[in-house]
Image (cartoon, rainbow, N blue to C red; front, side, top):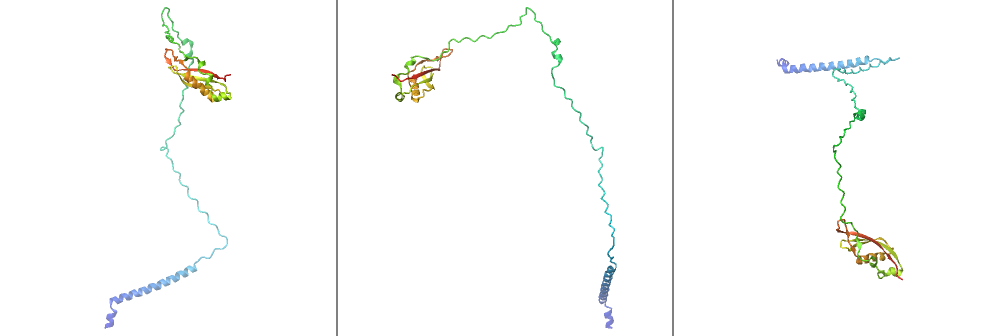
Length: 224
């Protein structure tokens, strides 16, 4: 009695069915795998022998379609006509036609006006005058003024000078314009002239005293 109750237990029955199904599935997998491998080995095609026919090359790809241009969307460019350039203005023959020149007639007895001449420049009331010596230029230098060194060495020479005379008649500056060749003789020339020379001041065209100039020369000679 206990065997029947055990055989009819639903849980045990379910486990038995699952175990049997798993065994059948494993057998089926082994069978199919073995048959498939045998079938592949049997139906492998033998290698080709003899002349092989080359396969034709693949066809070239189709060219891309060229886009069509809508004639309405493109604005036509019209050629620009040349701009006429007028010739530069110049004289024409008619402008120089003597028949077009009208010479006005001058009536006799009519005063057409007189040319007014400008007044001549008035002559100056005084004649400009340069500075003039008031004492004798020969007395500005003497043999006693001969420098000792050139005198002992026997040096002689002529010095040219230019003086600037102020409005008071006194010499304000002396310049040697041609040297004697000896520095002591040149310095002595200006030294004694500045000390002794006296002048009448220069005047302009109005008679006013102005600064003037005076030029001269001195001959240095050793006395006998």
